[in-house]
Image 1 (tube, rainbow over the protein chains, first blue to last red):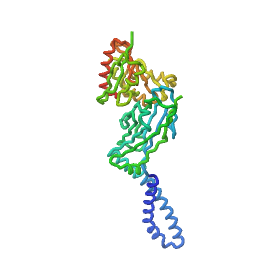
Image 2 (image 1 turned 135 degrees about the vertical axis):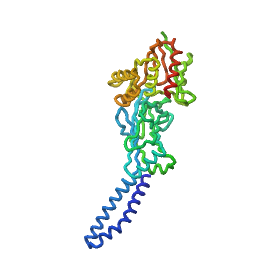
Image 3 (image 1 turned 90 degrees about the horizontal axis):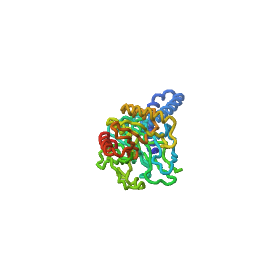
Image 4 (image 1 turned 120 degrees about the vertical axis):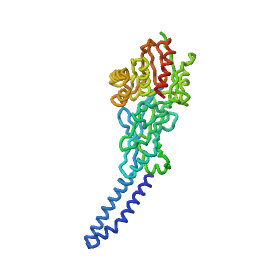
Length: 216
Length: 163
């Protein structure tokens, strides 16, 4: 999906450049050799600027970042090692926060869409039915909800910066094997938008992609 | 003075409240995990905020918080992190003052990363001490007052919408 979107953005930049090139040529035509040189230089600068503007400021995708904090330290990922003793009722407490980066026209449009129509980002672990989430503390406004299956961030209050957070702890329901790798899943859905369009417009990222639970 | 146990379960009607029951006295300890099954398929776990809300509501009904069991992010009860006693003391002051907002803000701010495992309260009406834990088990330290405590917990749960 990244490649598709990058191609699309470069195509738009090229299209705009082709529209601008005759105008540049027209302005510099009467300057003979120096005019040709200036025209080429201007074309290079204009095309570079267009790529930057189109890809960054106009068509930059919305980035949603899920950050896991343990003991006030951000997890760097990609794998979080959790050691626990046999029979532990709880495996550790984490602060999950959702951060939003929206600097382009497109991403701001998506943010407005979310605020108007809604959307959600569901953070859960796979395989499920193995590790469960316990709600510990929530932010004052309820834009994150915790169920045993995971944390759901409501995107109705999406804005630039840290949007919301939830304190959760993880606990095992069944007897875990000595070593258990568990994947973190981040499922985004925007109201009435098909999945392929959602993936095209929004990037969901997190440094943490996996937990490794080891019994000591 | 003997103790008695109560067990909280999520209400089957799904209306965000707990139901407190006295487990069958014949129930062997090995069968407790089965008895804990409450919400569809899940054992009950009350998080820090739910435990604090329960203690605050009990405070309005004549109970006074006397002890908090607090742990760090790793939930290791045997090696509590530094400063946990100060946190317990300050949290107890806020609990006794009944200041919900300040109490929750305290755990969201300065005491972030600390979690409540259990809260002990003492009745001002002579029903003795009660300890409730995050797994839903409630120890009533004076078994003669189980009925009264159960009724109070039931009313509290309905008001506080803990689950």
